[in-house]
Image (cartoon, rainbow, N blue to C red):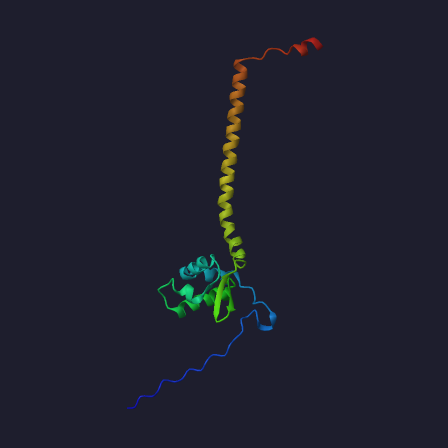
Length: 158
């Protein structure tokens, strides 16, 4: 049997980034898209790396033991969720963080953390009310033990 040569792969046509097509920005990602994007530990680590500033895909991939194509897939998920933007700079594509899509996720998770915050505030208020009552009670006990001298001005004006 003769061996057939490997089929040649055609180069993929260049697709402009979504924000370049017709000058329209990409549609806003849903809360589910953003939550799914940050659910993966590799993608969270990429986001942490981008806090320091834009990086190339190769620069990001060096920090992982997974393949570069796998890192590119993670970057695509982050880009499609809107959390990461990409920009061509010369022959390099730089990825940068855009935290605006995280606002809705933060607001939703805040529903749960605010409840705990109110509990702490109400506990502090309860402590303050009890302290004030105790101080007033002690002040009343002290005044009963030591009656005040009559006010001489009131006696003179009567």
